[in-house]
Image 1 (spheres, rainbow, N blue to C red):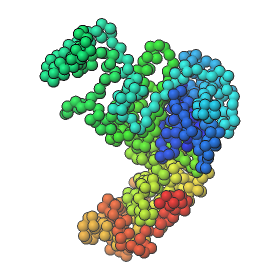
Image 2: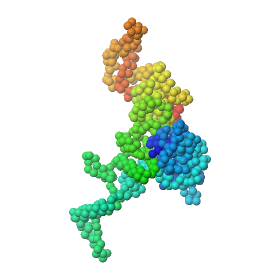
Image 3: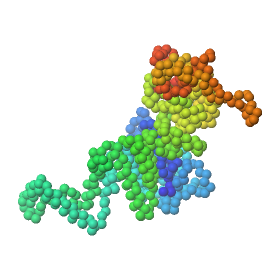
Image 4: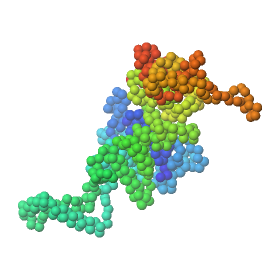
Length: 631
């Protein structure tokens, strides 16, 4: 393809009063973000630039609260697109290549005089589409021009240096846009003469000699069908009376159960589907999942066919493919498969999605996260300072298994399974809402040293993140160190979102220390049986809990001598030690229920939610009061 849409800047278009998008891949960009963040507006903006048939109206102009019709009609929407030679790195501004980056010879010929050069002789083409109200016509229209260069962010709306020549339609024919929205349906497409399906099958070319033979065979088949059917014979005889009425002896009525003319094939084409254990059924008998998928495959077929035609004519061609929610109506496994098929498309692809299954298949650097803060659209991509090992962890430990994290309004990170399963119950009690209702995910990172990839993910995509951490000294130091390395100048603000458990405890030890022994024993024995703790004490007392180094040095190897640490549950405080040991080795027995027992057994008093969890919720409520408002 040898080129890419590298950057898109939008002003006053639909909900996007001001938004800048950078694309780092010439093959694919995946847009994620909450509903109404601006994903569809972004796709429509690209259509407005490259599709001359894209209809525009007052609905495409940003409307501020209280705006009148006259305000909208006096406002212009601006969409700038930067096209660069395809180099797999962010090229909107910083270029470090020692040699100039140039388009291929074919594209240089196609773009011609519209190619701009920067100070380092790197080539680019900058297109502007301006949507404005034409008062003489009484309607909105699109004006497309080529910019002399790529303007600075702050000068976009004032910039007016254009090439005098206006690009012709042939300029844009090499940059076609193909768009599928989330409401796609092959059954509707088979009836729509403007669909990709109809465009593909409208001109079925067949060798003339074969065409004549096929039509003769069809005529014979039609005659045989009529002759075999009493009903059709009867109908044919009665309809033949028309020749008597019209006094036209040479005329006759012919019934064609099967299409007679090959030229009609495209209009009468029917798609059926059959699996290995069923009969053939037409598409309108299948569910929306199959129909949606077939619609996408039709687009794939149409794009590939157009590429073959352009290749045979030796013409430049860079398809721009815009797909809204390709996962619609599909099973999660099918969603994974469809993204592989999407990536097989030849062209530059932009996909908007809400599917963790699709996100799990994506190169993390191809993700464009879109959000709104105080009405302003913010776009984020993965930080470039991520190491190869961190990237591996991000792909395989987060995106492949926890892709839904990218769709979070907020993350709460903790270390262990018990916290991960308990915090949602306490959250529900405190806020009277489930976590999913406000877009919060709680994640066990699996240990104090494993926060980093999750924090880098949150930092890159500007997702608010809180940490509920164990309180051991080395854990506290690890958390402080990793937060400082990632958040840098915002370290102090991020540390305000961290809660450490008290007295050096992990979560189970903290609950014991806070006096929730009775609740823990009940939760444990509810699952493992009455008297389970006593049996644990009898079985484990006097056994080794591990080995530790002594001060005694071995005379042979000059190393510290190790000895067994023997459990003693009958000393003073031994019952607490026994309970902690039992809890650590049987977390699955109580982790999902302990919160319920704490709440139920302390209903109405201050112990209903442990103090450190209250501290965490207080920070969330204080620093992100919009969550409380949404509740």
